[in-house]
Length: 107
Image (cartoon, rainbow, N blue to C red; front, side, top):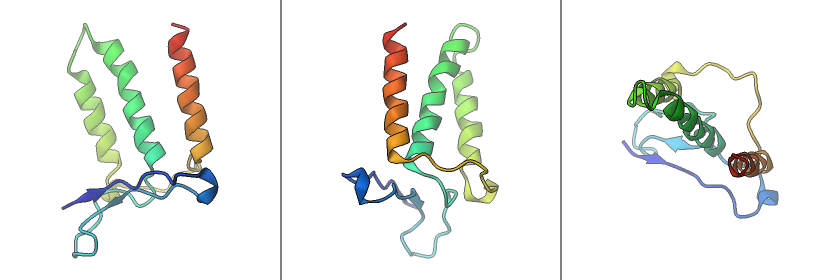
């Protein structure tokens, strides 16, 4: 099975970021990822690993692997339930990235 990541459009005005796609590209494979998963969702999942790694580094250095496993299980299509929150826009994601950089600079 192949999994494709559709990157953001070069210009935010060109339209909303497309969702991630998974599956065989029409080769009869079911999608492994939930249909509404976006690049921004994946970015937030990856950002969540840092604090978990920091908090568990001396107590349980491999605990982040369990966290990632549980989060990734939730991205599977068969586990999907409707989200009450709306997706992040490209502008929201970029603002969040700037805010993260700023917070890290202040440390």
